Amino acid sequence: MPRAVSRWKTCKQVAEIKKTAADAATMLRLADRLEQVEASLRELQTKRSSAAALLLAVGQMRDALAAGRGFESEWRAVKVLAGDDGDSQAALESLKDKAPSGIETRASLAQRFDVLAPRLVRAEILPEGDGWWRRTAERLLSLVTIRREDGSAAGQTSAAIVARAQAALTRGDLAGTVAELAALTGAPAELAAPWSAEAKARLEADKAVSALSAHALALAGVKP
Image 1 (cartoon, rainbow, N blue to C red):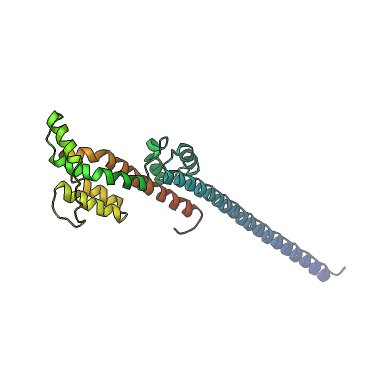
Image 2: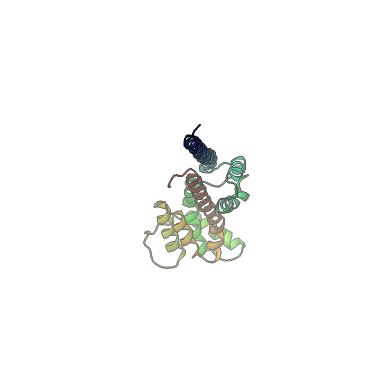
């Protein structure tokens, strides 16, 4: 075989080997990229599944809170599904103590305040102590209808403060009601304290559930 022909065949074989090697390398790169894409898709699917489970659990806890029921089992489920997200765990921690017994609803708080309001106004004018004169005055005052002041009433008397608090509650502004009652002093303040504590717990619960819902939506890639 002529030397030139032999050299040509050798070059051709080398070229074919190089082409085959290049094709193999290209296929390997494509396979690697495909594997990365599949891994990303699996991770995304896992995140979305976790987000859906978290949204469901948060929704169940929201329903229990809205009904004023205990929500300990729902709380535990959300805690597990929320993972190590610091904000979510902090929100859950704020609800921990109330989970067994539940938190009073806004409707119930409004009904209670309608009864409490005139008592707050009377408490300012009742004599101090727990003697017979105070008990007598309290019985007499309970027969008197306390006229509701306008919600824009100015001043720091119990009547004015309670009027503004009632107006805020009528607007659905529970935080505003709590803020107004914080200005009470003496006997009216002591009388309002248990109601204000429950109202604050309700506000904290609503805030926590909103934060948990936002976290779940973020996991799902949805803008709240």
